[in-house]
Length: 153
Image 1 (tube, helix red, strand yellow):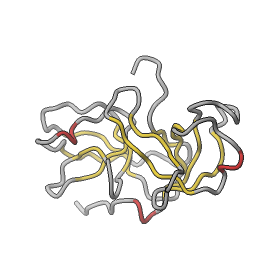
Image 2 (cartoon, helix red, strand yellow):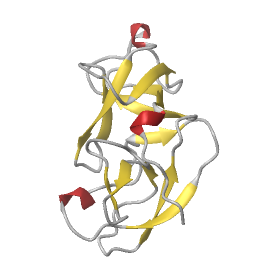
Image 3 (tube, helix red, strand yellow):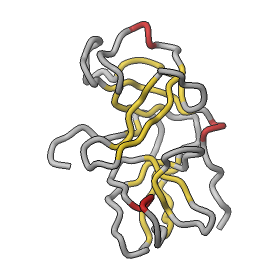
C-alpha cells in the first residue's frame, strides 16, 4: 500500500492466524491486506461489507481461490482503524462506531459513529496520532456479536 496507513490493525493480543480459501466469485473479492473479511456460505474469504466479521486479512486478494491468511478476532483484542468523519476527539471515547468499507488499496475500512449501533466501542485514540488528527486512528474493541464464529476444522 505504499506507505499508507493500514485499514485495520491489531493493537493488543497475539495474532490468531488461520488459513481459508479465497472465495472464487463476486465483487466481494476486492480486498487488500489489513481489510476486515468474513467467510461466505461456502467457506471462502470475502470482504466484510456488512454483517459479521471474521478477522483481518494478511495480504491482498490473490484472485485465484488459494488459501489466504486471516488474523481471526474474538472480541477480546483492540484494533486500530481510521476515523472517517473528521478529526478525532476525546469525546469519541465510549462511543459506538461501525466499520464502513470502500474498495480501495488505500481506503478500505474506516470507522464512523454517525448512526452506529453494532460493530465496536471506542477505547482511545491510536497513540501514533494525536487527538484532533484529521482521519486519525482510533483504538476500538469489536463487539463479539459483530464477529463471525470460527468454523471447526
